[in-house]
Image (spheres, rainbow, N blue to C red):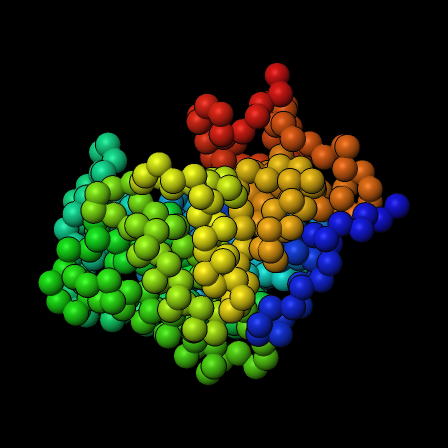
Length: 372
């Protein structure tokens, strides 16, 4: 029995790349790469387990420079020596039938000092994050800004040479691209800060660097997406009005999609008492120009279908694919009642989940529904 769900329909991105369905694996840090950023055998097994049903896999974030490494066990895309491992990763995803998209980023002030050269973290300005234990970063110099812009282009070249189908720029979740856009972390008084337009300049320069690399090195259609977080709690911080102006510009830059990072697809404002879903506002603003990916607390097939009925054409699943790697296959086979929506404490080996991710899951109360 095969389901006739909307999520199983094919979808062609603006670049011409066709996805076999409308469900993507969301980018999730798994802490599995080797210390030098090369892809590990465990990492290949993790992705192999989760690439069979989805239309595309967006990998965990890959750092573009050593001072941008945000997590232990993170993928690196900063050296040509990492290309063979990246190729194994792309090949593994392709072997299961999905498109492979490498998410690239720089952690900025969110990088743990012990993971970066000289334990010196960098950002737009010398402003620490409003989190307990946060260190004060050093403001990037003009040369460091230019180096970082170029590094995103070089990481894209490596993704192309490794056989990936695309890259996603991680401009969300408080990392460097967002830090330059945010009035909280960007207090610069030069051309990279101040006005909203100036705060957009760094992420847009990164986007242009990546597009130049695609034009130079890709021989065919290549996916380019951009991930955003709609708002920040901090004051000053990114407001919804800021974000709507940003996506207005992004929608004119020949992207394949804008990926909206939310913990709940229907999430309202985190800054004020406005329940209007941020996802709906972005979709209404730019959805007629560029595809928008929705994500967040969509656990069941019915919930995914309802989200697609809002007009959002693509859905990314994160925690759902941790608990149920065969989520899409079970929808395809009419076996929806057997989709696992809880995590068993004895299922680590079966689900191919590494110790760091497994331990993280159980360290955050309520993050996953646990079956005793």
